[in-house]
Length: 215
Ligand SMILES: [Zn+2]
Image 1 (spheres, rainbow, N blue to C red):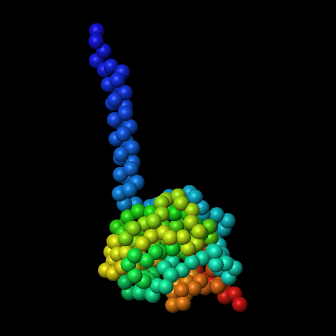
Image 2 (image 1 turned 45 degrees about the vertical axis):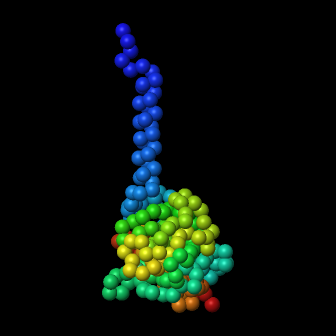
Image 3 (image 1 turned 90 degrees about the vertical axis):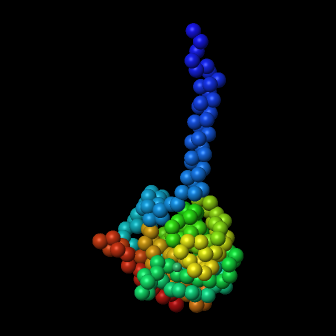
C-alpha cells in the first residue's frame, strides 16, 4: 500500500507551519500596539521593584555626574506643563521636527513601539527606580532590551499619535504612575534639580513625592 503522506510531504507541512509561526511573531513584534500600563504591571513588577526594601526609596540627584543625566530634548522650550485643566499626563517640550530625543538617565529600553495616543513611543527603566517615557516620535531609534547611557539617542522628534505639532511628550513615572517631571528637571533652564528626591508609597498604594534641597 502506498503511504498517504510520504516523509517529504510531512516535512514540508512542518516547515510551512514553522514559517507561519515565525511570521506571526514578527508581525506581533513590529505592529501590534502594546498597552503601556499592562506592560508596566507585568514587567516592572517582575524585573525591578523600587519598593522591594520598604515603602520608600530616595534618589540623590545632588551627586549625579554629567554622565548620569541628560535633558531629554537638548535646547527645547516648554510647550505645555504636567497636569492643569486637561490633566496632562506629561510635559510637552519642543525644538524642531527631526531633532533627536535622548535618554534622561542610564537604563534599559522596556518598550519601543506604537501606542494609541502616544504614536511612536519609547519607555526606559532606570536603575534609580524611575521610568521615563518619550512619545510622538516620527521614528524610534532603539529596541526593547537595549541598555542606554544617559544622552544616547532614542528617537526622532515628530507628531505621531495625538499631537497637533512636532514635539516631545515626556513623562517621568514610578511603577507606571506618572508624576510632574518638573520635580526632577527645571524645564526653564533644562537642568537637573540638585536634590534628594524621596518617593513614599502609602498604605492605599498612592505615591507621595517629596524632596530635600542639598546646599
Ligand atoms: Zn503631552
